[in-house]
Length: 541
Ligand code: AMP
Ligand code: MG
Image 1 (spheres, rainbow, N blue to C red):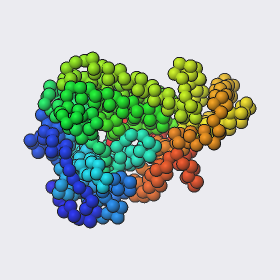
Image 2 (cartoon, rainbow, N blue to C red):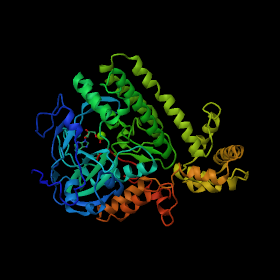
Image 3 (cartoon, rainbow, N blue to C red):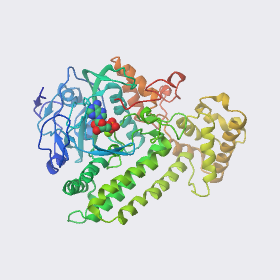
Image 4 (cartoon, rainbow, N blue to C red):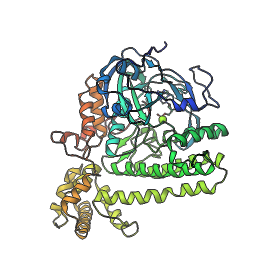
C-alpha cells in the first residue's frame, strides 16, 4: 500500500519547513526495493512509512512541538496524526532509512541500519535551528533483516516517556514529539520463551539534530569506502560541529581528530549524567551511540532503584552484564575506540587519535568528582584524599538495598550538627527497602558514613538552606522508575492514557516537590520486584 501525500498547507502541518541536508548531500541507495539486502556505497535508502489500520494520537510533548514548528492546536488535527503515525507524508519530506553498522555486545555485526526507523526529514524550527524528525515503528526498510519494522506500544511508551524525562533531568538526549497507536497488532515473543503473542503497535516520532551514530562511520570504514566516510564526516562537521571547521576552508585530517576530541568530551559528559541520575542504558552497542553525545535508542533501559553497580535491566545481557550500571563509563570509552578505528582510515596517523581517546578518562573523572560533590552538597571532592570517604559511601549504599534516588534526595536534610544515629538516619530512612536490616554491622556502616558526612558538612559551613537548594537541583525527586513506566503501559494498553500524561507532566519538573504527586516519588513496591517490565526487560520491542 502506498502512503498518501498531503499538502503542506494542511491544518496541523503548516509550520513544518523542510530542508533535508542529509539526503541532499550524502550518497543515496539507487534501489528502492524494500527487502533485506546489503546496501553498498550509500548513507541511506529512500523508503516510505507503511500505513496502518487505525492510527490515533495518544500523547505528545508540547515543548518539542513548539521547537519543530507545530502549534499546539495543530496537534489535535487528523493530518498531524496521519503524518506522525506513518499514514501520510507531506511534500517537502524525504523519508529514508539510514545505513549503518555496529559492534553489538563487543562483536562487529556488519550492516545493521534503520530497521524500524524512518526519518521523515529535517525541519527548520521557528528559532532557525534544524531538527530531524524520525518515526520509530513505521514499517519495514531494506535494513529490517528478518523483522517487521514495527514497535509495540509498551516499548514506544517507554521511549516516549524516558526521552522526555531525561531531557527535563538535564541529561543530553534525543526528544520525543508524539506517540501514536497504529490500530494494528504486532507479534512479539516478549520473554524469548517460544510463546509469541500479539500486542498493540505504536509509532513514536523522535527528534534530534541528527540520528548519526558511531556505526554510520564504522560501516563506511569497514567497507573501505573512503569517499563515503569523508562525505559523512564533512557533512557532520559542516552542519553539526561548525565550530570545528577551519575558517572558510574544507575539513582536514586535523578537523576529524578535533571531531573525535569533541565526541569524547560529549560522551563523557553524557555518561556522567547517567551515573548521576541512576540511568542504565542497557544496550550500549556502537550503533546506539549518537555522534552528538545524546542518549539514543531507548530499549531495555532501566533506572537504579536499589543502588547496585552490577545491575543491568537487560535480560539479553544478564550473563555477561556488559552494560551494567558501573561499567557504562568503560563501555563508552570502548565504543569511542571503535569510532577512532573508523576515523583512522582518513586520518592516517594513530597518535593524534590516541591522544583524543586518552582525554576520555580525565574528562570523565573531572566531571564525575564534580558531579558527586554536587550530589553530596559539598564544594569539592579530592580524587586522592576522598577515596576512603567515597568508598565508605558506596559501601554503605550496598550494605542493604538502598533506593538511590531517595537516599540522595534525603541527604539534603541530614543535619551535620547531630551525632545521634536515629536523627542522622531519619531523612534517609525512606530509602531502605528492608529497614529491618538496618541493625548491627549494616547499621554501623551506614551511620558511620552519615557521621563522616555530617562532619564534612560542618567543616564546609554552607548554610543548611543553601546546601539543600543546591542538592535538590541535582538529586531528582522524580525519575521514571521502572514500575511507573509499566503502570503507564498497563493503562495505555487498556486505552487510558491518564497515567502516562500525568507521569509525563510530573517528570517535566523532576527536581521540584509536587504536592499530590508523592506516589510518583515512592520506592518500588514489592509487587514490582520481579514483575517483567518492572525489573527485567528483553530486547523484544
Ligand atoms: P536495537 O538494539 O534495538 O538498537 O536494534 C538493533 C538493530 O535491529 C537495528 O538495526 C534495528 O533497526 C534492528 N531492529 C530492531 N527491532 C526491529 C524490528 N522490529 N524490525 C526491524 N528491525 C529491527
Ligand atoms: Mg538501535
